Image 1 (tube, one colour):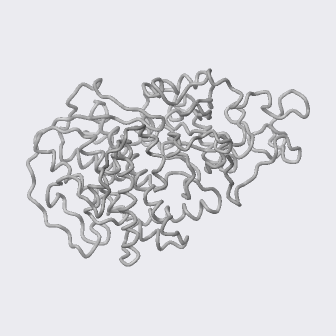
Image 2: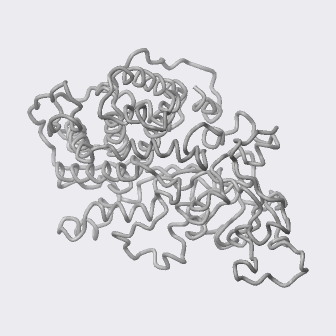
Image 3: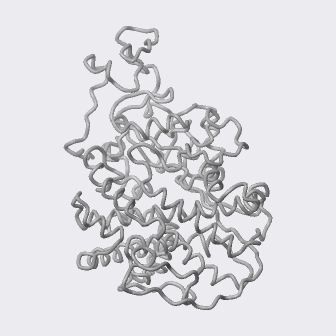
Length: 513
């Protein structure tokens, strides 16, 4: 199977071409002032190293399965000890790839798209027909017409629209939305004096806020929260949940064509990049789902640190540290995404002492790079205020919504601790558990106790003539009515009983609605 590249895809010179050898990035050449290693005059740098496909599969470690899921951090350190900055690994289907473990090596891959492209159609495994249509990798690495899979001029066009759209968001409006929805959620579980903060708080807040920022009617929020949770967890109804998200976004785009507003959807539709309706829909979906998944993890892990680290909690209470300090520490120690897949080599090169061939896949090891001994020789040393972590990426594909994600997490946690000042963990720390997959690690539950909080009197709803918190009056501090669970939005697909099969196989159609 072959997959054509875009017409503007950069072409790599043939390996060993004398006309290009002095300019090939990643090779040790006199043009860079670095002497070549001893050997034949015509020897290609790194030619004595084995390439990825020459390594015995039986000797490579898998990024899936019991070992990887039980202790991903331990696996990364075993790979670092054995291979250094860049290690060969196996993905689902035992397809080989390079895992980038070093902090510096990760930055090199992120910042040099001329060597490491985001266009997954370059993957040699695709071109050789080794990736089946039902591969669990497909939902993540199958090429789509999105800025995250584009390079060059097309990337600048699409990314520019998304960045400008997000930058147009009123940050004060974001914080007002967060304050409001935090109060609503606490209103629901506050009287009980106990709650499980992952499922009752962290998994709800980001999507409730993001639906408002993209311009959706308020009643869309609760149902989309449930759909996003269902979709990302890969349940039996994940496909139906994805269809619901797409259907809701289609209705939104149609509505904004005649009723524009101060929201992300409108800004994308009106941007000078002239995005099609399909491009608007696709990028809205990426923003919603990516922002939700990463911010859920950031909120949960930061709350866990605050509740289990006595020193940090004491400093926080005494005013010596802040919630942003906690976010910085968590972004170093527990990035919301452990891995990012991926990048694809545009030509033969060297990286971290490994021979990379054109078409090889590279996985960005964010979690591993953040604990690289070169940059963090003492993992116990606090890193408050240090934002040189890899959690939001770097280079042309750096996360465009990181400021909004941080604002949601920071404001939500701050408001929660204000409303429930004696919040405390309800179980011993050692009883907390995580689930791990090849891309991320999730805190399963965070049970807490606190002094029961009486329900507050209902506040009047904001005027319906403006977008609350953005182009209208400030949002009320408490919900006008308790949240009563998911609210259907239009014709939502009902879960239909189907023959049981692997949920990853069901996810192949996510991005092909």
